Image (cartoon, rainbow, N blue to C red; front, top):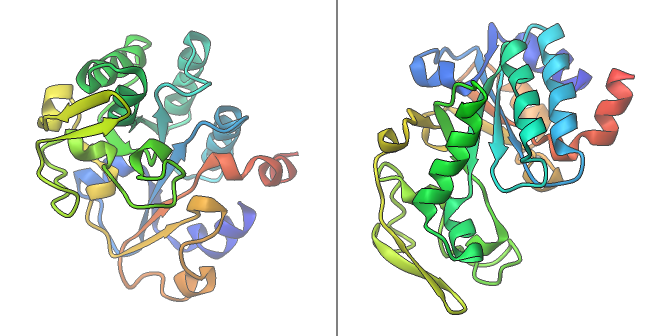
Length: 242
């Protein structure tokens, strides 16, 4: 994190949550920063520690929490208020289509219940982004052909290469009908994955999506969005914050 601070974030005029990008803070020297908090051991506690580190460095970001994850408990949802207290945004990491297949339930009810959990503790939830669950892939290992993307339940997120917007997806004896609805029906305003950007840097899979030096060298030419998964930063972040 210190390298990110010294070489990239400190160059920016502002490091802001994705809600601010959606509202129009789209300068070329503004970084939109988001975190997808996935279902790996320690991810939630690492995310809270990372949020505190960002606060002390003057940065704000968005933390997308994954419903159905191991950390989705009543106590942790209350603790999630700390993100907002530190000046960050909390959004929802949408996994409702995959969960609908897994548990043979309605994806609409799954998402509505999860949003209710977050909002019931006082969190302001406006943003979402899709989770790349292994069940989204043909071979269920996360590396094969994509069958569906979890944001397809929203009418603003069509995936014509995967099939018609309204279609059936199947796993074993379970079939789920995708019936896209506007995000507004869930009181959601934006999807981070669909916000316009000039450049994008992510460490999905544990490595940067493009050479870090190239991103640093080209910073300021176009707005940069950065995705960091707390799941990958546990040990390294312990060393930074010790």
